[in-house]
Amino acid sequence: MLVIEAKLKGTQSQYSKLDEAIRTGQFIRNTCLRHWEDNKGVTRNDLQKLCSVLAKNKETPWTKKLNSQARQAHADRAWSAIQRFYANCRLGKPGKKGYPKYKKFSRSVEYKNSGWKLSSDRRQITFTDGFEVGTMDLWSSRDLVWYSEQQISRVRVIRRADGYYAQFLVDWDRREEHELQGKMTGIDLGLKEFYTDSDGNTVENPRYFRKSERRIKMLQRRVSKKHVKGKKQSHRYHKARQALAKQHLKVSRQREDKARKEALALVKSHDLIVYEDLKIQNLVKNHHLAKSISDASWYQFTRWLQYFAKVHGVIVIAVPPHNTTVDCSCCGAKVKKTLSTRTHKCNSCGTVLDRDYNAAKNILAKGFKLLAEYLNGTVGHTESGAKSLKAQGETDLWLKNSDGLALSRLEELRISNYAENPPL
Ligand SMILES: [Zn+2]
Image: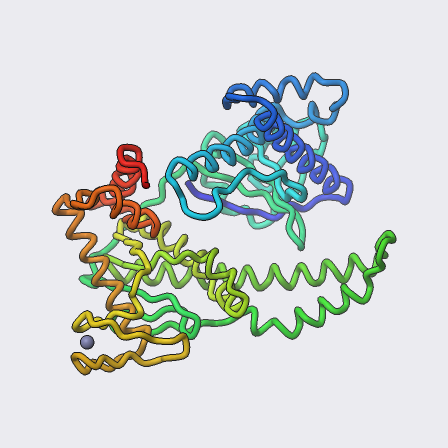
């Protein structure tokens, strides 16, 4: 799968018609969710049928305007939210199970392979359903020329702070030649450094938010000043709000860009990469660290890492985050540290290392151990059975994809183990 994005250029009335389509998609998704809540044993098929019922209903005439396959795509959105919730319950995921929520401010509408048409030079798109959006220009859609319309399985229209975008989902398995580098590494994702690897190299953390923070605060003050309680907001208020949203968008694009570039560079220069599978959502709840952690963009980085690993056929392993900072990477002794202790000093063997460097070494060792267990077929077959399985499951331990060895099967293994031995 490949996603190609292009900016949509049109008139104000076309944009507001797109808004209408987005609201309709949201309405269908929410109605499906309500239907599931109100009835027992609802299936995906029931939700699909509900779409055509809605389209025929005289009280909801706008639903008919949305292309019929797009209606189904939004029923599917509701269905996958429901499925995700069930799966989390089934797997005994600790903490919140992600009960499906009603959407209030959807930003996107999704079309399958009808309801739109591309011009032959791929510079324009025409929306053909009942909203009568018509033809819009596509900016920077160069890459689309290489693919046929049959290869595009979805078109998603997204509203962002600086305009409307079309995302094309292209069925294409990207494969790149990977030359063996003879290098393996463990990486410790950090706040001070973007990451530290098990050879002691570091990549600087750019802290984009910190850099824009003064400007964001200033824009935020402008918005607050212009806000009038209990009244319709002025034109100037909306202008200020938009300027703030644009600045946030800029920061998030910078982060995404950095995450993508660093991940690609790492994948290209290694044959095996081990990282710590951090529970980022839980960490972000810590107020003191929240800003810095979101700014470090670990989540985006690990997502890109997995993606590029698949494309380049490189092995990426995610290991559970237990004790990687505490353990001595040389002798295994436990060395307690506070958040501010920057150096690892082991009293047992005398090793002195940078804190993150020590952690990165531990992470690589954990990855090797896991790999060995997998290759020896001992993963999931520990003596203590369900109890240790639970310990593993809590940390969401799994190997990410690889071509050479079918390592991704480990994840299936873990899930099937759950099915046989549900966690206590
Ligand atoms: Zn030691």
